[in-house]
Length: 125
Image (cartoon, rainbow, N blue to C red; front, side):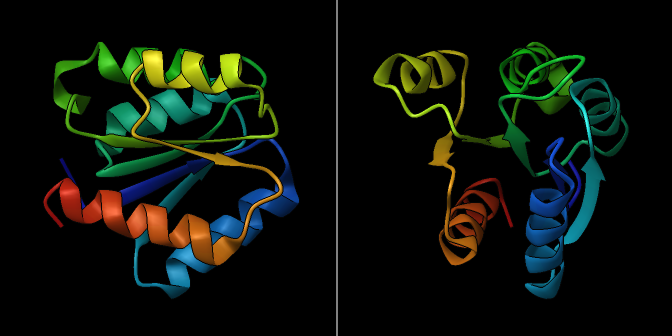
């Protein structure tokens, strides 16, 4: 496991916002614009924390999360799901797949950064 934080979102504005905030907070950030790219980066970098948009093309965030949880080298990666899907069933689906946290859009960048900090520390940071 590395000290990297992976951020994946197909919305360029959100990707830039989250990446900029986390970089400013001192994290080494890698970013992806779709689920296939996110999974490849996760396998390459073995991030300590991953922030995944649920509604991405290719593989959605839940599919990426499921793949992360099924990969031995990534089992300790903490995952935040970031999504506009706020119904209880959507949240439950995310937690059932192994999410460590769920942040609903629209979100506060400070709140998201706080969640990442908590999970980063839990993962050994």
